[in-house]
Image (cartoon, rainbow, N blue to C red; front, side, top):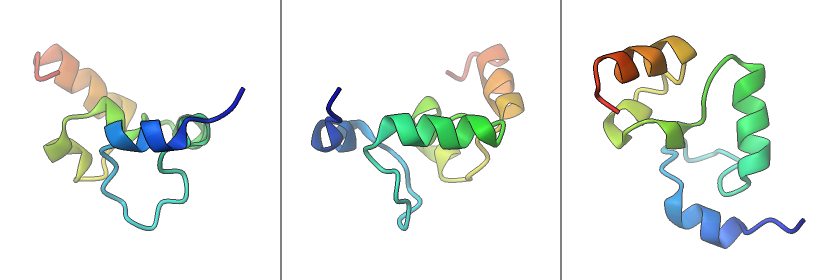
Length: 67
């Protein structure tokens, strides 16, 4: 399977500028799951910018119906 990096970048809201995984979703997801996190694209932009990508925060946002 070929990566659609350019297409993926159009939907990527990652605000961490030196990220080498931007647009390479398979690497991004693997990286964050190893760290018990979700990728930034799972969060609203204002939350993504906090760099707290924890499962716990995601669960709280879902519970609060924020996402």
